[in-house]
Image 1: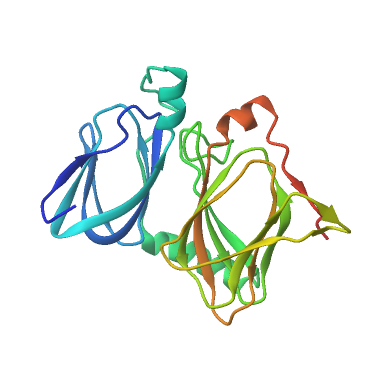
Image 2 (image 1 turned 135 degrees about the vertical axis):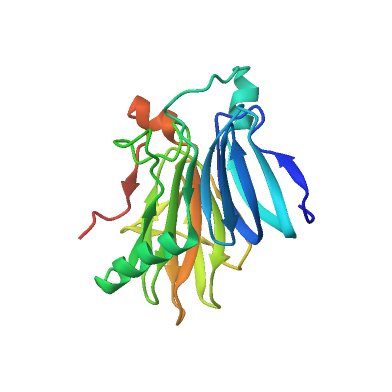
Length: 231
């Protein structure tokens, strides 16, 4: 958005996950307004007239919502207390990541669970969101799940990548497709495809992963599985 520009957020959606990339501004839902800056993440209720306004230097943000599903199904979204306007400031997220790093955890992150869904670890009833950090030498080992995953690369290095494939042999993907990571890259991991994420570089890498997985968790059909059982 240009300086002082405005835009609606979450039209025809059940909920929206927003990552602020550059600039500053505000997001408003009803009578509640929060001020945002780069690195902040929000869960915004959809179909309630939410909006964004840029500050004096403009505002650029990345978002994922579930409007493709609601439009396809022909659903009319109704407000619910299970979708609460939630703001995770960048400083809070950085502290959470630093805490896990201090504990020596190399593959860690922040589950962006919102206060209306305390037990489910979901950001909205439909959307799972996770800020994922991999330290040098760490990996999200090969796994698969029924929901597609949309991954936005926030920080990467010259040796960070994903491996994807359909067939396993001895817990490894046979003839995997390698996708190297670059900042600002968006990747879609198809449902049930074996995949893993790896950091063979010398700096931390950071991604925001969003999955349309709420329906799968509700129906107990997420089918999350590892190529090798966790040690």
